[in-house]
Amino acid sequence: MFTILGGGSIGSLIAWACAKSKLEYQLILRQNSAKQLTQTIKIEPINLSKHHSSQSGEYQNKSQVFEAAVYQFDKLIQTLVVPIKAYQVESAIKQIAPYLTDNCTIILLHNGLGTIQTVKQYCPTANIILATTTHAAFQPHKYSTIQTGLGESFFGPVQLTNQYETKLLPTPAVKALMSAFKPACWDDNIQVRLWEKLAINSVINPLTALANIKNGTLTQAEYLPKIKQLVDEFCEVSELEGFKFEPQKILNLILTVAKNTANNYSSMNQDIHHHRLTEIDYINGYLLKIAAKHQLVLPHHQVLFDQIKQVETN
Ligand code: KPL
Image (cartoon, rainbow, N blue to C red; front, side, top):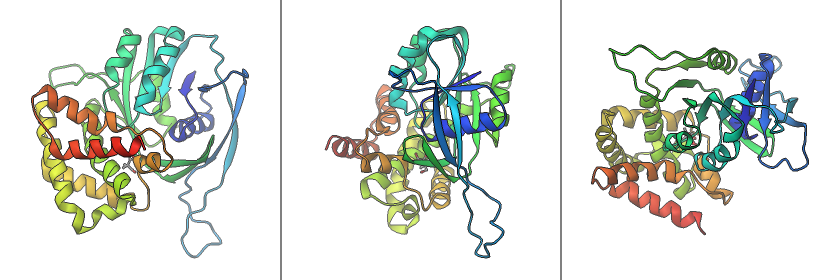
């Protein structure tokens, strides 16, 4: 049984993947004072087969509606999937911790870094799995999700492995989830992927949020000097944490993602637009915290952090 926290866009895609693969799953809803037993979920999954009557090559989304069981805080939870914003993790885990088995698996799937210690504090014996996805989706309404880009997902252990260590293998539950939520792979060095994703989010998210532009606009030449400064600072701090990246490789990665998601508004852009809290503390804020630990300053990331904090509170 997979217990999925929240009915956000990625959580809904995972619930839909479980439903299609006939895996048992349930949702934890934030407010369930009415003791609701099920929740109707609407999904418009991306459909990559061309609509037969269309010569234009446009992709057609066909919406799917399904009923998801809602967790009643009665039985113990063995596998918890946490596809919520990083800043929501602490209060959610604190509330759910008494219902988790001692050897439960917790799958963390969010932008940014910095929640592992928090989860360990409340669930010291849990097996924590880190995950990242490039699926793009948004919710025009609560419990209604439109998938705008077919991505891929990676799952892996918290510990880094090296060539002398035995590889850490996914549990059968994680394997089942990966085959339902296709395409998904296990990656022993998931932390490297998470740092790469951090690089992408630390540049694309605040820049697009502050200038109120789509991701693709960042590929214009005028943004290049700013992006390069941010990348250099990123590489400096990541190396101090044991993750050495070539600045050119990170720059190419960021520009490729900006190009591939050209028509999307980043999650931080959407958060600012809807007057929601952003994940800045776990993205640029995380980089600044790590830099401070090493007596390093990151002036360009600091400016973005301060500017986002400023608009967040307005
Ligand atoms: O992860 C993203 C986000 O918006 O949070 C990117 C990759 C930048 C896509 O928009």
